[in-house]
Amino acid sequence: MNVSYSEFRRRARESLRGQWGKSVGAILLASIPSFILAFLGLFSHTLKVAGDIMSYVIAGMIALGTAAFFLGISRHQKPPAKSIYQGFNNPGKAFLLYILMAIFICLWTLLLIIPGIIAAYRYSQAYYILTDNPNISPLEAIRRSKEMMVGHKWRLFVLQLTFIGWALLCILTLGIGYLWLGAYISVASAHFYDEVNNQGEKPPAPLDLSKS
Image: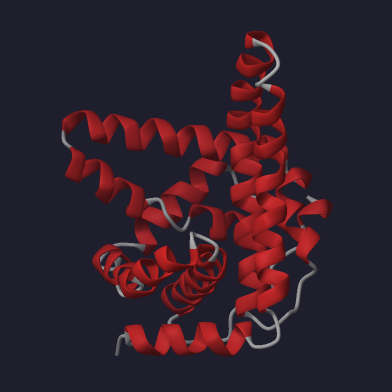
């Protein structure tokens, strides 16, 4: 039987108990590289172009580190906020996975917007999969995500949609509340991955990417 959306949210809140500050701090840490690159781009066109290129290069590493960090939070492992940079220990695969996903989603989007959105949900679990299995290839992570999300893409979409009320309330905080909401959604999404991947079994501990 499928886990309810309210149960995913409850699990996320339980995992975040005592970890909210660390999770918000991790999100802020994840934004620092892009902020620095954008700041440097204010001084010259050359720096702006270089910064834009570097932003694409590190995007996959940040995404992989974010997946690893929030999986750790969801599994009550209390990872340090700095582990949001864990993806930098596996730069080649993180970058290649980001590029491949971007290409595949873009190609589907060329057909119509809806196929592109479906493709994004089809590949949405790839970073979690690579976190748990750092020795597989990016293409294999994408393939496993496609298989895993058969019959579950709509469920993930609706789960994320259930946070829309909180998103609207965050407007009243001048956007600051989105830091907490981002953590909430990320942990709920990590619980979704573990549930779909393990079908209720005890999830594996994320492997240390620094050893890959």
